[in-house]
Length: 339
Ligand code: SF4
Ligand code: SF4
Image 1 (cartoon, rainbow, N blue to C red):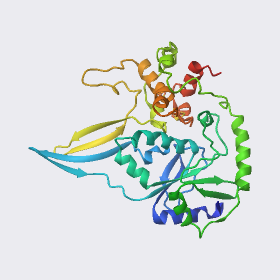
Image 2: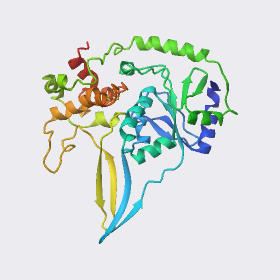
Image 3: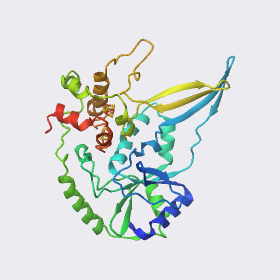
Image 4: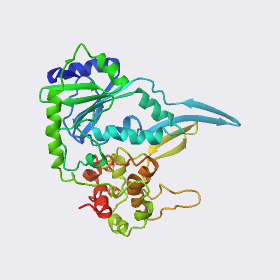
């Protein structure tokens, strides 16, 4: 394990950003967000960013390709040229875990090369949590926020940041920072972890249990009458899907500029009424069906197709942002026998 004193953190950021793009969480009027380090920005102490770190690998909009059709000839112009390494610093355990959930979608055959390219070039430096919020329930899904992993795992104490490489990529980066860091034993980190674990035990959602859901539970929950009451105030605004680190739905559209066709991929939301509209019609005509889809996907369908892993990481963003105060926790409580 290596260590750097807090007053040298800017030097660490300067060194990393001299070699590759570095993104750190910074405070803004709209809450914490990841921004490119430019030598002046200060790292936010916020528990989490308003939007998750998934944008780095699965951006909200991207121009996939441009093409021109003339007769029987198609001229293709590649528009995505991302071949430089980048570092995302300060990713919390829930967001680190969300990459595993996204990987199972985008890296499964057929591999999404746009996503894979970013995953290959991105280095994740995580940050252990010390002050979890009342909306946190990552522990429901077996996530240890005091051991967030990533390529390099960080722990921030009152006077230093401790760094430990977890992958080859992380080891290479950490080694390149040896001149700024020093060897450290893990005692301060272990003491902090023990203290934070006690805080986690006292959180209001500490006892939230997901075991009623999971692999093979489709028939048990699909026709539950509770979906109607749970969904009746849902506005279909899609906010919950846009702040969610694990939501992965997108739409691809072509725009003819008159000179060429530009193909874009943009995030979509299963909460939107036209999300499932197809040539033959729309199989989900009501908000109850759309609402059910979102939560069944995270709590039943995803684990059914992914060895029991849930499609939620308990980050609490949907709890904080839904305008009608509906969220996955309420669904789990109502349908899953949680108190
Ligand atoms: S469903 Fe809510 S709590 Fe779960 S990962 Fe998405 S935003 Fe976070
Ligand atoms: S659950 Fe809330 S955030 Fe999600 S679509 Fe409905 S109203 Fe919007």
